[in-house]
Length: 216
Image (cartoon, one colour):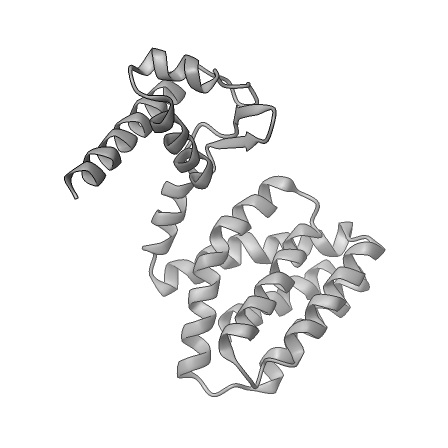
């Protein structure tokens, strides 16, 4: 047990040191990081510990590991911390954030969507339709795909990435609503109406329907 704890503490120490170097600006986003042997020597730890630390950093979104090509710095701020902060927000704070993020993205999607976006949205909506009155977990999974594709149709990578991090909060809200409030077909039908508004490039209607859906 003590060996496992020691190994874990060494990995945590390595992660902390690498995060410090990232925050200090030792490496730039997109830059290839030093090799495992180089990092091991610089940090005074074993290659195995470096390898485990890199996996932790990759999981948190700071580092991208490319097989056969090394590791690259993906972000300076730790996305995992943002996700943890989002998970602590209240239901009201979650609604406010959805109004700001999702509704505005859907308005842009109505103006920028492509035929490929519409096809992907229809497929996602068909996938969730069969689960609305059935298994909650299956429905939430499918519904998140639909909502992510709505945001993706705005063709703004920053919005898409933000919503991807925020989707855990959306999932929790959906789970809560579907277990505490009777399921209403008209609520699900709003998804189709939003899609229709996007197809017709009616941004204001799409945003209005999105607000109604968030509040339902």
